[in-house]
Length: 315
Image (tube, rainbow, N blue to C red):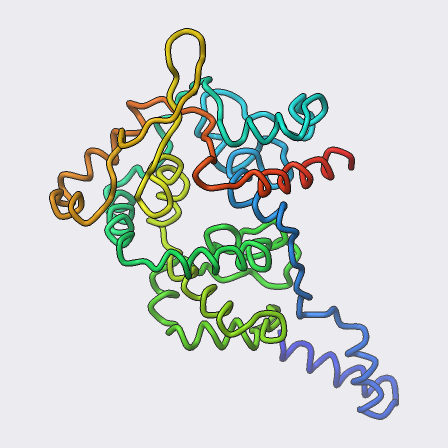
């Protein structure tokens, strides 16, 4: 491409009769801007993308990547009565308490091959080694500044990626993770690379290090766990409570300690060979609900999500 551009430049200079510097300046003005200006998502949009978009889609159309794994259509939020007829407080209650209507996850959901199961188990065994305070801070920054291009799992498939002048690198591959040290990732985030702008003037040194720590989660195992396991087992493998249906009155309450805690004792007591069948059969034998977010989100954060969705609904 660079050679072609140079040949074109030389031809233009020869034909125009203009000085080389003048022709170069004219050519530079005609070329598209190759560095994308950073776009920071609102807090509500970032929270929605991280917690809701996998099922409901990036714009609330019910077409998220996980929608194909459900046996019932995912509601299109932009046309939902939940937005048009419900109050903000009702929306918050719905998100924090979830739904008692159970749906079956398709057999094709979750890890399918032995390799995919192995990736997931390897990630589960990492859970106790992660500094979740730093990772949580890094995820918040990443979701607002990076996910729109790089995607939720670093695979370069964010909503804005199609507008990039080049294809984005998959940050979740083992080769990428192994080839770049923490110092190199910090330098890339700080100074920028190719079409990616540097964030050194936008983020503090501590925030950049936190983003780097979060990026170290990127892997096939992390994507599978976050998509199929975290809703019940929590991001850190330490579930506190989950939603259950009581009787025929559709009462909802929260119980503790019903599902395994992925602590050191549990992982030490189970080999990979023992965990593999549990992973392979859990989704096939268990019905799920619209997950609740009482342990992940606060009411004020759900309020921001509601405001973001309302802005989409009005448009």
